[in-house]
Structures are given as C-alpha cells and as structure tokens.
Image (cartoon, rainbow, N blue to C red; front, side, top):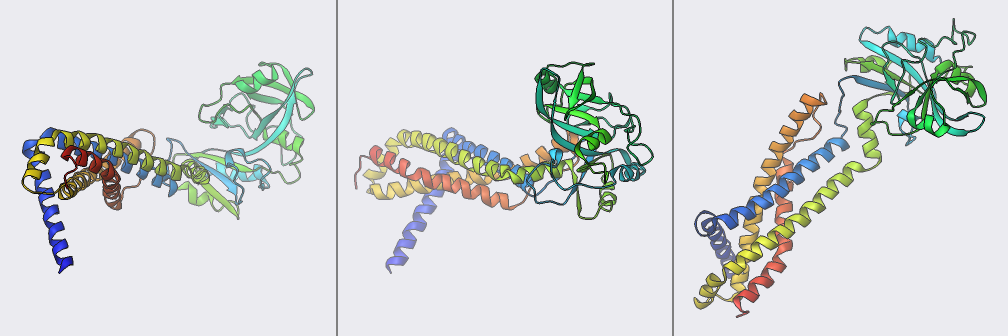
Length: 404
C-alpha cells in the first residue's frame, strides 16, 4: 500500500509539474521558460553536431578534395604518416610500374616517392633536411607541398632501364630549408656528401603540409645516394585523378599494398591520434558545463522571482519537501524539452553542414547522421537537469524559508 501511495503521489507531482511548466511557458513566465529551454537546446544542438563530426572522422568518412589523389603504400603497422614514410617497406621496379599507372586513361599524374632525411648544405652550413625524390611530369603539380615544375621532366638519369643517363642535380628547396641552409636559387649544394647538386628554385611550401625543411630532387638521383638503385625502390606512389573508380585498379598494382585516398589518410591519422575521441569527449564536457551553468543561473533566477508563489503554496499547506520535488520536476521537464529540441535541431544542422561541405570542399559528407543522436541529446540534457538539482533545491529551500 505504501508503494502505491508513493507512486500516486509522485505521479501527481509529475503531472502538476508538467502542467505548471506548460502554463508558465505559455502564460505567466513565457520569456524565462522559453529562454531556459532555448539555452539548453542550443547547447545540445552544438553537442550533437560536433559529436557527429567526430564519429564521421572515427568511421573513416571519406573527404575528397577537388583533385582526388591516391597514395599506394606498402601494408605496414608503422604509425608513421605515409606522406613521410622514411625507413618503411619499399616497392621495387617503380619506374616501370609508374609508366603502367600513367597509361591508365583516368590517371592525370603519377610518381613514385622516395623520402630520406639526409645531410645537406654548403661549405659553411650543413643541416639535416627531408629529401624527397620524384619523377616530374608536366601534369604533376605539388609533392610534399613543393611545386615540382622546376625539376627536369621524366627523371633523365634513369634511361633505358639503367642509371646511366644525364645527371641534373636539380633541387627545389622549401623556404624554410633555404633559410636553414642560407642558400638561394642558383647556389651549389651538397646532398649526403655529393656536391653535384644545385638549388634550382626556392618555393613556398603549402600551409597544409607545414613548415618542415624539405627538398625535392630527381628520384633516380636520390636512389643513387641511398643505395636504392639495385631494385629500383621507392616507398609509395602518388596518383592524381578526378575519378574515384581508379582506386580499384590501383589496388591490383602491387600485392600486400594499400590504396588510400586523401580523406582516408586524414581519417586514419585522426584515429591514430585519438582526435575524434577527444573531439567528442571535449564537446560532451563543454556542453555539460555550459548547460549546467545556464540552467542553474536561469532556473535560480526564476525561483527567486517565484518567491511569492512559493509562499502561497506554503500557506496552502504544501510542505517545503513537496515544493522542492515540484521544482525538481519542472527542471527535468524543462531540460528534457530543451534536449529534444536541441537534438532535432542538431540533426538538421548536420544535414546543413554536410550540404555546405559537399558544395565547397568535398564530394562526400563529413559528419554522420543517426537517429540515436536524438536519444543522446535528450540523455545529456536530462543529466544537466539532474546535476543542477542540488543547487536549485538549496536555492528553493532558502527562498521558501526552510519551512518543513
């Protein structure tokens, strides 16, 4: 019987709390209630949108640029980025393979890439620089953030399957490398003790790559310096194309290799660094903190403004304990409604975010949309309401005078 009475009492309080919240939202305190609900809704909407972006990164949502570049890399468990894959497993017969890749009708450009950190410099200055060897072609634009056009096309030192062609000594330096070595265009320079190189050009490195001191040279000439001529080795291939269907053909080039798009590599690096998890966790904690402060502030001010009504309830014989329960129910109802509105708004925001992304910088959605985000948003909103209850109940008890 006691359980039944307790249940009936709670159902009555919940019913009164819902009706009172609805009445205040439509008549007696429209601005305060709506403002409180709107604040929670905004916080939850942002939480859902940021979380969806983190989930999109964690689940390898593909993000293509206008030029859909692919990297062919050896299968490896190394945590290093394939963009700078020094000392990783290497491919062989890369010049011949590169010619096969370039014959594909959908491929615009392709080059093997060999990268090593080598000592470069002059008689006065010697520093270690990331040296990247490539096969330049007119279609190739930038590799490792540097423009490849100053290099003589088609790697002339490698001729007729042998390393007996014309040695060019071409070197394109990034601005940071040139400053580090104190050289400029036209200056002689040594690479790994070989003094037959010349600074062909100094280029401003792409911001997306960073400011790593980097040098571009002919692939065959770097192979000669590093002992990679025996099997014609390189660490990866960079393939430029506007057709995503090329990926399946590239996967047949080498056994035990992986073909990664630009977006997949970005997502892979994101997973390796746990950025997606950190993004979602940070969004949760920030939303929880801001939502808690918002609810405590607005609801606390509302309780102070309702001092007269609380006094009337006390005069009617309603105990302070029941009044506190009523305040708690109202807070939970308010945050729950705000969470529902915020979660639905967040799903709409995800759709708009994906539309904007696909029309500007990508061809695929960057965020994941799922109905479970509605439940997630409501749950976080209710958690905000529950965590705010102790502060609000203390305020309500003080306003009511602490009468039992």
